[in-house]
Image (cartoon, rainbow, N blue to C red; front, top):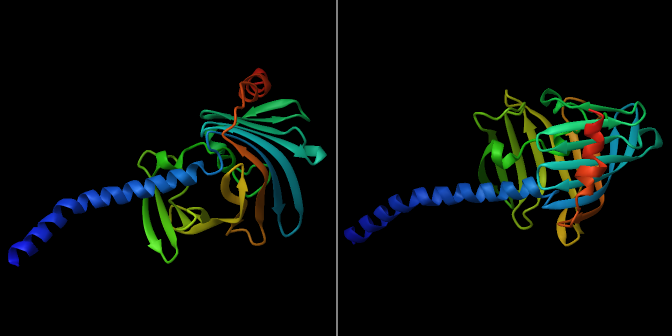
Amino acid sequence: MLKLLLFVLFSLVIYLPSYSCFADDDAATLLKKMDELFRSKSSISMMKMQIITPNWQRTLKMKSWTIGMDDTFIRVLSPRKDRGVATLKKDTEMWNFFPKINKVIKVPPSMMMGSWMGSDFTNDDLVREVSLIEEYQVSKSTEGENYRLTLIPKKDTVTVWGKIEFIVNQKTLLPLEQSYYNEKGAKVRTMVFSNIKNFSGKKMPAIMTMIPLNKAGHKTVIEYVEAEFDIDLGDNVFTSVSYTHLRAHE
């Protein structure tokens, strides 16, 4: 009996580190899913953005194209006064095009956390300058029917966030909430995911609501109206149509 007990304890000592590694790998796999949820290998989406403040509201309709995690092109379709405003990200570089003044402005890294079109979403939120799986250490815990993913920036990661947390439903493996904390550990904004829909065979939240906790009565709602994933975009979107056009005005 004593020999059997010693064997069990010895086995636990040997296999416990491997179990921890699998747990870390599982958390990283789930984070990768969060990272790629709205992008996939390629995508074309029609979206509506509603910006709500205590004093005014406005709604933008826009179309976006993405390839992997590196290339994003967003064009505003309405209202008329904003029609044609475009944002392009290629690799680590980003530009905004303003048709009224026929000018392209390159967005420096220091402005990636700036507001996009006056909304509560930042430039980085829209085009994802960095990959979460590459820039953050992640751990996973279980809370009732959900998982909590806790992201801590790696040593060399440049970010204003001290921590990011995801609440993910265990059954669907889809996000319910994403919270952002400053370097002092205070929660400063929360994004709520809702209205699960099936877009070209892919289930995902159709609505994302960003709520800044330091601005009472403010929120921005992005709704995916249409979305197609893993389709052949050809070479036009990020070369002859958008990239070359924007670079020509740089």
